[in-house]
Length: 47
Image (cartoon, rainbow, N blue to C red; front, side, top):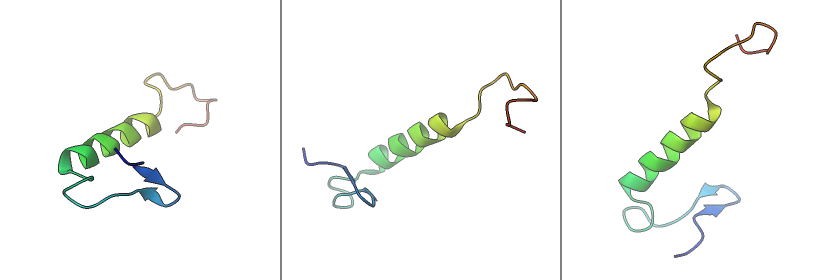
């Protein structure tokens, strides 16, 4: 399999390398990684 991540993001042919399932997986992973922690301390900077 070719490299999926390049300098400008995910690369590949639509519906060949970049399937809807892969797009969903990448989006879900990005959302999970950018979600603040469940317990928020007021001094943590998350508001």
